[in-house]
Image 1 (tube, rainbow, N blue to C red):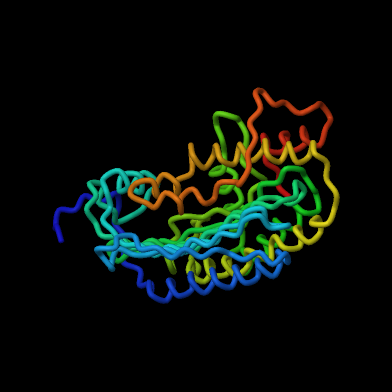
Image 2: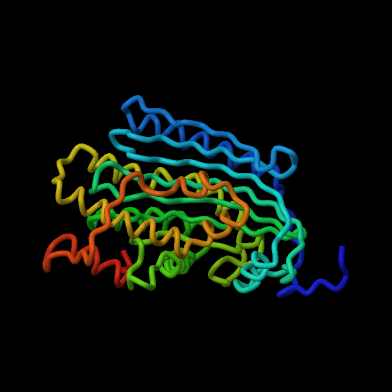
Length: 326
């Protein structure tokens, strides 16, 4: 180990059991898959694709990309786990330093380990929002950071659905730290933003990154157990969304509403390709099929698609331009 490491800040080491979190990731993935197949109800099942990051190096890591397509409720659902190890490139190291991660050598060259579970559910119904969520652990030089979140991307605003979703996550946050929900909701709104459009991708939820175990939370107001919080987020993902899906899955919708859903999915993909840090991280040596698995199954683009004044479509765009506290 070099003794002249130029780090972006100093930090004490935080002991986190990487193997235990890896087991949590895989167990959570399998539990969500089983619940999603039962919820789907059509008999469709997830295709499971386990892959090795480097066939010549068993220590490089692996992933499990699981996808259900063509369901009656879930037009496309992906639930993925990834456990990888590698060496930080200068570009990755500098990006992490720019966010204030401590203990990172800005020149790269440090060994890292990462474990994550992520999912995206694209529904077949325009009144059921897209669900995106993840939980993750990243380790470098004995320092561990947790991240994750859960957010909704609706095509039409349902006041009760939005309020219930955010209330659910506020209750989860309140168990761990007073005021945490407001901070993570603001972080979510800030992160899922398309500056070229002047719109947020959805109505938000939670987003957190760079949380160290047993130190300060995202609000920087006192300590709490970031690992326990991350695990609770993973536990609550489906519970926050299933009531919305069950409420709308049998309601009728028009061709116009379906077309609007496909147009708005275009914004979803725009964000992923242009701004998402996870996609950019993965493109630096990652597995392309697993990176792009979050893309919607069908998308429509229409030049200068402006909703009619006073319409429900315009109501959505107005909310996306100015996030609300639900």
